[in-house]
Image (cartoon, rainbow, N blue to C red; front, top):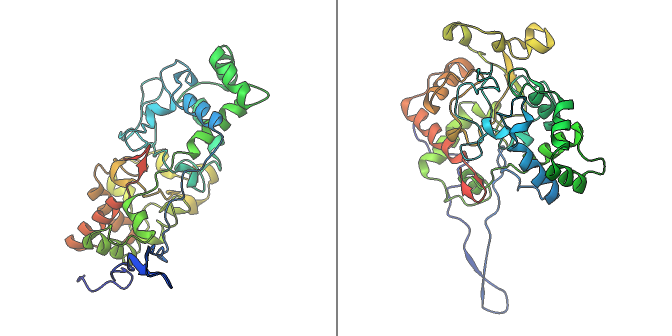
Length: 329
């Protein structure tokens, strides 16, 4: 595909930085208008009750949520490393690998459902299941409540926020509240969408155009650039036969619904911060972003991009890395 002039690049120079104010002869700044694109910038980090957020942060790092005090949420969701742990399969409380790749916790609150097979609707329900999972934390909620209630610091912190103190529902709510603050706005692509069209290089803008033209945007859409629909893994070919060694986890939503239409169907993952969240897919099979793009083209789109187009798309994907705690991921 040649590099024809993009139709929607907004390559015209930005609107004048200064304009003459009527009647006074002084200049005032003019802000560029946001672009009218199908993809939208991430919303700002919500301002939530500070005490609840802090309690949730402490719980996120609390190993006593696991049955043997070895695992916290942060064990598999490293906020300094993309919100996951960069393993194909995280290790559970017993040191054994789990069955599915750990998704990033960043921007998870924007997903329409949680887990790869989208089996729960809320962050609270996700927390509830992870704690009792025999492959993850291996605990039970009665024990968790008893453990936290025995600690004076948690007794005080919970009573400051919740009149009924330490309960399973309150632990889940505090964690979910904290997770809602784990957004990563201000990526270079977000700045582009907000009107700063000079922030991306020409190659990155061409990459965005190719992303749309090849049809990637059909599934990776919205503010989270994914996370809001289901899709079969292997629309244009049998990915699992080619990969070999099929597992029960590969069945995706079929395990929940027993509907043949849901065989190998998963929640479409967000592409936010995709450059820093390798390995990829539910099975952690793609070690690099380049490999992941190849697999998507072959099995989801049924197309073979030129080497140039592939490179351009990868350059665009790298503009989706946002900021957390005031610095880029």
